[in-house]
Image 1 (cartoon, one colour):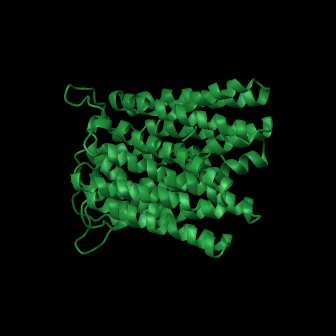
Image 2 (tube, one colour):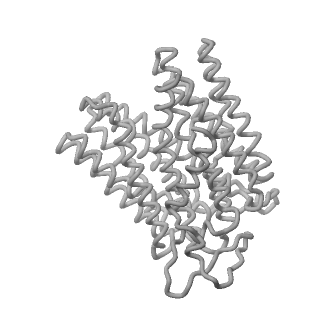
Image 3 (cartoon, helix red, strand yellow):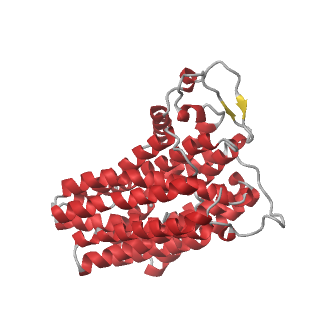
Length: 446
């Protein structure tokens, strides 16, 4: 699906990941009465003067661990599908151009279909829509696998991959559950958004590595096959947790307005588009730079460092609630991202060392998660509650569009100028996001 072991092993691994980031709740929750949450969850209080890990308090809510494990299993394949498709198609047909065109078609189809899927999720409920939508998308992946395996005409690859566009926005559905459970508690919701962004970074860091391992170790179709199994399994586990699911919200005359028309959303989505261009261009340019240094195989590890820095910063950002409203913090986060994106450009230009560039990417990545966390918080505030999944999916769609544009721009600069000069593209994209956020800041309101 174009958004970038056994089930028992992954379930245990997912639980271990949560346990590693979240100390045991029973060791942290006090004996005082619990506060009832408006969404139905119960967030434990802490002892006065005794600081508590905010993530432990989140996962003390009944059902929170269960839906998070299912969502992590379903989210991991999102970083696998594009890489798996490229390896599978290029290996079979001998054409990276064809593989790129097929994945680009899937990305375009997702940009069109995903908001409609999210709208149905808001209206009819997560379990009722996500399961059949995922099943249809998995059938599309299987069709792609069979078309490649059986030597079907090229046009069938485009049709099959486009069918995977019905994949629901798993991260958005998880954030919607937190928004439902933690309604009215901005501090807890900030921690939840931080955890979700860190989970995104972790999955997109591990997904491509797992896909490359499966396709290279077993057979070219292994990444797509395992990804489909994980996606369907995770969605079934996630959908089964009905106690934490937000209630369906049928349209009314007063809430039928599109999220695109919500106050403050157009400039925010424009900033997300530019931020996506940062990610897309950085990936292409880094691969090209590593190739120019004769270490193309190390590009994945170098990019993983950026994701690792972002993941760690996201968890830290969630543990310490920053002061001030999100509307004021967002331009500051984008400014920090813009400044840190200059580090890889300077490292490449001044040293030409892949190791130093890798270190600079680790540092640069530390600003992306806080930027995305704060941006998603603004989306949740500006979107009507009955259109929340749709609004967050629009944000993801803007990111995907930016990734596509950034990849194209970065590739053009690399080909016509140099790989070192290509690092100027993510800096320019980040600066564009900064200008947009500053221009819209005076009119932004909670």
